[in-house]
Amino acid sequence: MTSGRVTVYFAALLARTEDGWQASDTELDDVETLADLTDLAREAAVDDDTVLALIEQEDAWFGIVRLEGEDDPRIYVSDAAAAARSSYGALLTDELLGRDEDGTDELDSLDLDGTEDGEPEPDDADAAAEEPVPHGPLGDLALLADFEVGEKDLLSLDGDALTALADMLGCTDVLEAVR
Image (cartoon, rainbow, N blue to C red; front, side, top):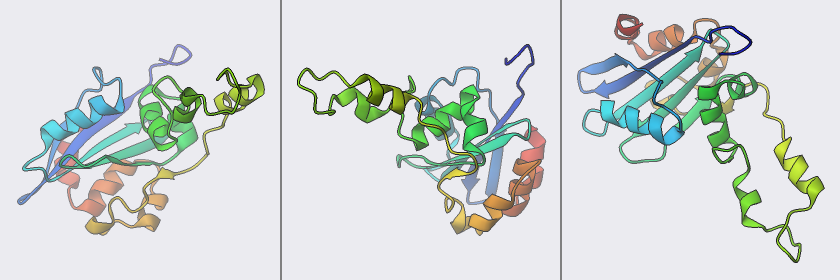
């Protein structure tokens, strides 16, 4: 919840099979980390084929997490700044920006700042904590290229983006069945 208003998310998993796409509605209640989301998506996979985790927040932003077997997830977020302000979007943007789950940069925790006692300089720590999240798209623009959804296609999506994306992938009926 934000400002007394309920934030509405839609999340679905699309699993690629030899017969086409299978969709399943998914609850994000137990998802606290990107690892939780990828585990959930891998459970929906058929024979280690492609699984897409789709998340949308009230037409403000959408995210795609693509998994293939045990490979690292490939991620795309339509508006990183908007996504970073939401709990599920922050999971994706933090990963894309190389931040830890607690919002700090991975390198900050290694004490590689050159000071004798290993303590970061206060100005450096403040600057790292205040690094802004970029406005606009962030992530792998080619994550759906092999499904003939290119960079321009992803960048053109707005409004009901997931329905338009499902149309491009040829699985509108399958996605709408779980909506």
